[in-house]
Image (cartoon, rainbow, N blue to C red; front, side):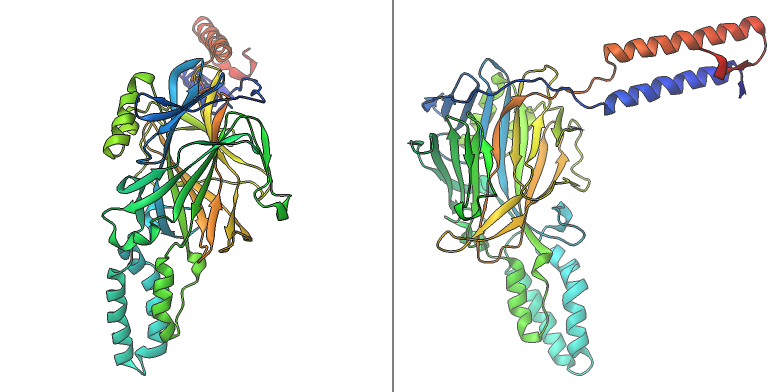
Length: 447
């Protein structure tokens, strides 16, 4: 193919842009490091606000007075980056076009009216009563809209709640420290008083690497927790579903909405701050204000199942992205902070299944867990999603800790720079040849 000087320059520019784009998509390198197998530790008070666990590997702090469930941790030998996981709240949502949480499908009055009413309820009532029993149809419509007013809000923010914290206690048989956050009061959400005492975050900080089997009757479902990691049991009991209230109303009209159209999402924010910004976290704990940490967060990116994701931009006006989970009971899902330096970095991970328990604590079933996420400008919003679980107790167990850090991909690496310089020289030589020869050049033959 014959091209002239302008074509060669355009090709060179395209090559430079393509190679730069490739650099952005290159997988992040990982540093190999082994976590210690035993890390004896004693909790202590820290700055008058926190409990602190400090080991040679990890330093972990959390609010000593409860207040709200928030956890901060860092590599003990490098406190330049502090990792933060905040439990923001729970959201009842509608699964209308997938199993994943999307903020535009929160199960509030307006969304239920615009979706379930239009797609399920009104067509069912119309088919049964509109033509033969018009007055019954109209009565049902009026009753339904009164029902909407009595539904609870979709979102229960944990910052609007009071929490109690049980002091850390060492469990010798398991070689871990145990403490619990328990939701003690719901403020400003009168229709959600049922959540009082029924949401817990039960925590275990391990001194030694341990394999956990949540249910001895199902020994295949186990996972290993390393020394220095914090394991949560996120527990929800006696959740009152809006869809149950709607179906109870519709029962007398012979109409029903499938319960698999709803779920409950745990909203978690993942952020990172500098040690000098620790007072903003303390202000948030003591004042119950929201987003103090997020305004200071400097997280540039995370890896999700080893794929790099940039979180510097605020994309919260868009739909949340579904997290592709692997086969149930086989793998854990890990979201890990990326760093410019190859050192230890924080992560949050969870198994893609949760247990449903009866009143005596026995396992009734294991259910699939899904997730969605979105960049929020310097931090990540993660939504761990649980399908409808009726009157059973839900139990799921995320983990936080430190692991060898995935590095943030560079736009131009030294190796790539050599390639770019070489390509540029080759193009310059080709252009010079054109000027000398004053004739078209076959670019295929230029090396």
